[in-house]
View 1 (cartoon, rainbow, N blue to C red):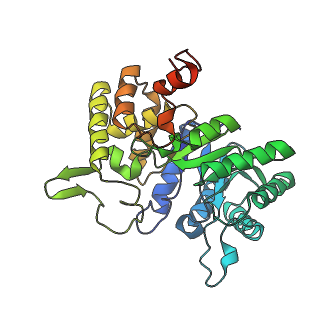
View 2 (cartoon, rainbow, N blue to C red):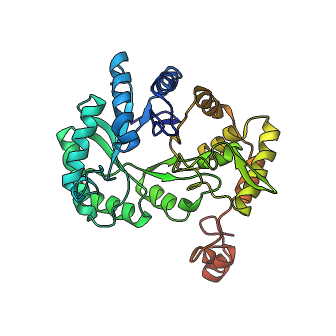
View 3 (tube, rainbow, N blue to C red):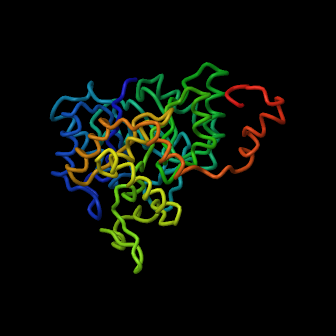
Length: 339
């Protein structure tokens, strides 16, 4: 399945507290499509289903269904009081959630159906069987996992390979200059299983766009203390480390004479194994700004500056797998890139 280098995230569509109202969302959608984009990412959770309803209407009005790769998600609870079966990864909820999404999207199939989050309970075998049945029934074309442990996706990929059944094709995970944790386990697992990784929040909730500033009085920035957006501050970590990363980003952005957000996105897109960062917008200008990041090609030196400023600590057992480890294991010979 061929997708654009940037996916349009639609969590903001018609969210009454902190999103883009219908007319703005509509202009963002059409501008993305007119620029050549084909990968639309939504979920049954977004704006309580309103995001899917809007997208379904936009697609119908321009007869775009065959052109677009349409992705949606299941797993989070519907909000029905006292009914645990309207949430989670079990078969009953998968079928319920999918039927609702198909109705709101005004389509009879979804191209990529994401398990939005691991529920910690449902066996991976049940998830694979349920989603595989939906692939065979033509209700979905492919499926992937979002926000799951690396071992869970690796187990699912191994079971699918061993039994020659439909397998996940991608993972959707948080990834940015200030959140690189997936490099420890998820990225190697994805490479081994042949999975793509679609990053969400590649701008860290606006932090890497320079939205916030550190002053003696504390952190400032539009919307910082609004309380309307549950993601404000939740995924944006105001730490000394992250301020240093932002300083390095400013240095590189000045060298290429581009906005911080574009350079941060260019860094994500340049990473091995990354497919189509998922970008949301509340204003049309933000979308155009994000698309322009595709024109940036950072030099090896610029990538190194950003890499070194944001490098992960070598948590156990990765400190063992260093050049020193090469000497103790292979006697100093060059093996698999070790020297």
